[in-house]
Amino acid sequence: PPPCPPLPPPPGGCPEVCPYCAQSARYKSGVDAERLMEKCDIIKRAEAARESGSTRFCMGAAWRGVREGTQRFEQVLDIIRDVSELGMEVCVTLGELGPSEAGKLKDAGVTAYNHNIDTSPEHYPNIVTTHTFQDRLNTIRHAQDAGMSICCGGILGLGETTKDRLKMLEVISGFNPQPESVPINSLMPMPGTPLAEKQGVDVFELVRIIALARLSVPKAKVRLSAGRTQLSEEAQALCFFAGANSIFYGDKLLTAKNPAIEKDLALINRLGMKPQEPNRNLEAPDSDESRPAEPQLL
View 1: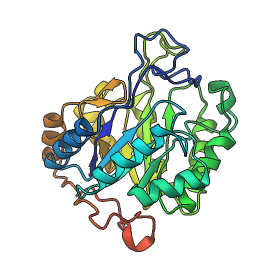
View 2: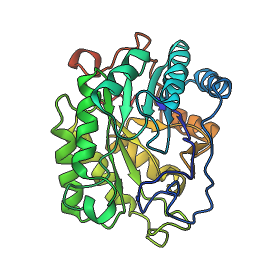
View 3: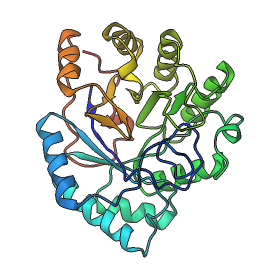
View 4: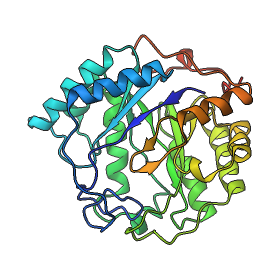
């Protein structure tokens, strides 16, 4: 599977109310607000990720400060230009976007935009109150219209029903074009957040949703995402055999721990899987011609 290392965003200062997220300024999660990382530090991490075999480098910012005409937005564009010159695909997650901002990100070198819908439209108001489900859809459309591919999935364990999970996949599969990447996250309860006491997702429920994601978005990379530290190697193998063919790779996944790179590589080798070569042409791989005909498990 193609590994994708996410660079953690500046945490602790986000004004949104997402009860699963330790980065919200509304909660006492122990995560302090930080400034945007220096470009030289980001480039070093990107180079290290490339040397480790990563095919895509993901960067994020946990605030609404990425707006056209601001110094922050210009800083982000400058960072993206330099990272894109390293030969990896560039993915960013910067929250809500307008059409003009999306176009500038694409021109700077972004190949993929991550914007999860989290859950079903019906359950979303029970989870988030500072923006709407339609806001999420609008950003996805702006990113697609600008020529970026979409990385869009959801989170299991937010108190949703089975019907909510199916509806989430129905919405994701209905995008035109369909997402190039579908992350399936399991809730990792974070201290200080409203969902801190939630129980983890049953591994067989996770496997079922991964299988359904593979069927509903057949040409996408189904990414086994947050929650892998809670899974045994056998459980992760089940997820791969059910249809997951990508992982987020690196020491941390936003503010949560992620399996060590060495452990991931050892498991991939034991299962007889091979990492995918990076997409060197830096084009958004959204067409049928650029996607694998079948999930790349071997």
